[in-house]
Image (cartoon, rainbow, N blue to C red; front, side):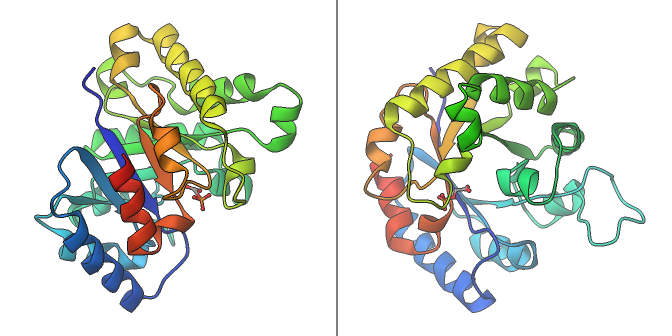
Length: 251
Ligand code: PGA
């Protein structure tokens, strides 16, 4: 198995420029000796460029939290995938539940963005996850399948291998209610089966599937120990050096 663990910090709409730069400097020092884990930070778009410049040549990559699918043109307020590449981004988070649920992003839109990201060589981190009421109605797998099929429609096997999937149960995001390692593993396994069904076993084994939702330095080790959990997408605990490094070290 050649999958590498990916720990990515999703800063969401937090931090000032000064906070961001201080966090980056702290992480740079602490993470310099880490070689077995891939690390990324995803700052708000206005801080992407200074953060990417500060992290150039280090082992910490930079990702955006969103971008638009069109190449350029009259799309006020949007940023293109090529612009992200231009300033040194490697990743782009797509279809985060906050974008799906607060801003009404559909899997069809996520699909257009996934294709656009792949076309310029960005690695999409495509988020999927069920609401609490969907889990309680035993709909978890159906919801994830719809999001998976919709978000990756038309993506070739070669490109699918380059994608990262983040399983983020919506009820676990920012709530302190982390999924149990077994709950996470069950869904991660189901996602890997979906990839195998739509593609093949080789592709399924290659795709990095992160868990996200209230991951911190105390619970990360147990979750990351599961065979199908290949990393974490971390919100709250990625805003300070110590907890984020704790998660990286436990990986
Ligand atoms: P959280 O957020 O770690 O604060 O729960 C995770 C995410 O939404 O990516």
